[in-house]
Amino acid sequence: MKPNVFEFKKALRIFQVFRNINEYGKEDKSFEDRKEKFAWKPIVSTSGYVKDHELFLPANITSKPNFREADLITLLDDNLPPIQSILLTREKNHCFKLSSMSKLDIFQLKLNNEIELHLRYGYFEIGLPSRKDFKLCEVKVGHPVEIKINGKTESSLSSRRARVFKDQVYIFECLGDFDQCTLLEQPTITKHIPEQRKVVDLNKRLW
Image (cartoon, rainbow, N blue to C red):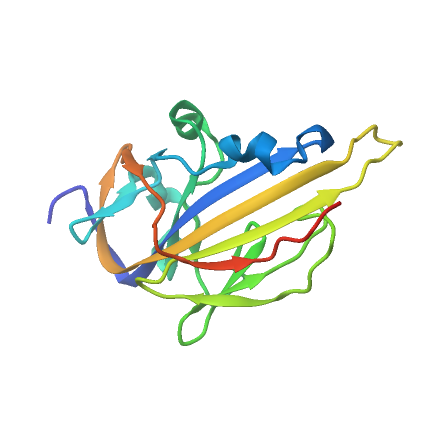
């Protein structure tokens, strides 16, 4: 076995997650004023990738909690310009053991016959109007799904915080099950969002 090839104890699933989050004030409330900033762009990724049915992951992933017992690993990429994307310090790989609480931002992942995606509402994470927690969809191989949600957090005189609006879009794509990976110090590749995908639109009118 090559020294840079790591064999998992059991086959685990890989989720590609594309994240596009845009916060703005009332001066940019018109979508025309912000649509260019919010548009999807090619993403320079260091989170890992699949090529020719082979999985490549960052070498430092082996030190993460739950890695050796994981059922699912995410490759998380933000819709940012190349330099910002590479320098971003947010967690790019989550190693989930799905028998326990598996929360990713505003979502919870549950294992049934397939892996289910559930909304977990929070005021500071999403804003108003509030939504109930519920199952959004199942994420299956070959069936990418896009989740759209918006909200606003109200201004506060005590903290001098202005009203903030937030648009959030996530794309979940199941890349399949793998029993091993190749570890690279920095697995850099340019990614594009899948063209064909199911859309779950939870956006509400905010004004």
